[in-house]
Image (tube, rainbow, N blue to C red; front, side):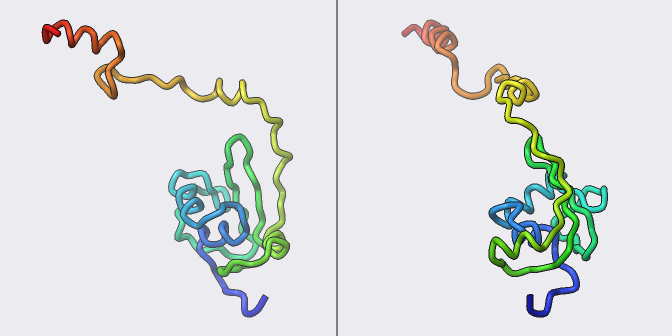
Length: 129
C-alpha cells in the first residue's frame, strides 16, 4: 500500500478490514463494548498500532485479530485479509434453540404499548359502548 498511516481509528480500521459493513456499525459495536483492544474495552476513536490485538464479539463468536497493517481507505477484499492475522477459534455450530434460550423472554410492562383485546373490551364496557 502507498504510504500507510502510523495510526488509524479502531472503527475505521474495522470497516476497512471488512469486520463490519459500515463505519457506523463498527462505531456502534465499540460503544456497546463488543470490541476490545489488547484486552481492554475501547471507544471508536482509539488509535490502533501495528501489533495490537483486537477482539470483536459477533453474536456467539469472538473474532481475535492481530493488526499487521494499517489502512484508513477502503481496499480490495483480498487486500483486506492481509491487514490482520486471524487467531479466532472456529465459529460455534449454529443452534437456533440454544441461541433463543440465552436471550431473556420479552415481557411487556402493564400499560405499555397497545391494549390487549381483553383490555380494550374492559375499556369499552367502562365507557358504556
